[in-house]
Image (cartoon, rainbow, N blue to C red; front, side, top):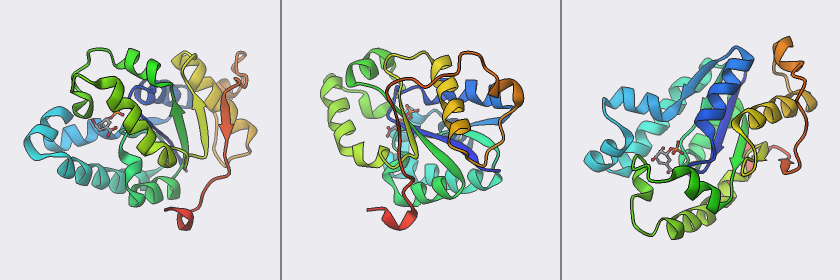
Length: 202
Ligand code: S3P
């Protein structure tokens, strides 16, 4: 069965929402960054410091390639996983790709003083976030659905995703108790995109 794959910038809530969603859907939750940390025996920030970003990206690619074909999971990717076309192809071949979005201000607020994100460990965080968001915008747009999480709680985002899955006739099984959530409704800022196929990748 297909995975439900969450993509999006740092601080958009992929891990928190992913865990909640997996719980509601009785699925395994896979956090790609945590798997990389397990494989390398050190936190992401240490991997960047010791071996550099290119090595981290290789590990990211390996984890995605290895874990996605097992299916039936909710997968939270790291914010840069979409930078590589090979990852996007793997994610799309084995899952429904859901993009989580948030405004730069909300991202900065959510990340706060957290030093575990090596790409943002610099004094000019606002500038960095805007620059990276701009560079990556076209990549995040490859998601099949996007939810702007800026004004939503993680609970609301997870319900929104269940609503999207139910209302778009996707071949995905939703447990009855999750499908009957009384509060499930479509929030305003959700975009449903026509799924891009691999050969449309830049
Ligand atoms: C990264 C995002 C991080 C982590 C690494 C690189 C990125 O994951 O994979 O620090 O390039 O955006 P989160 O999005 O879970 O913070």
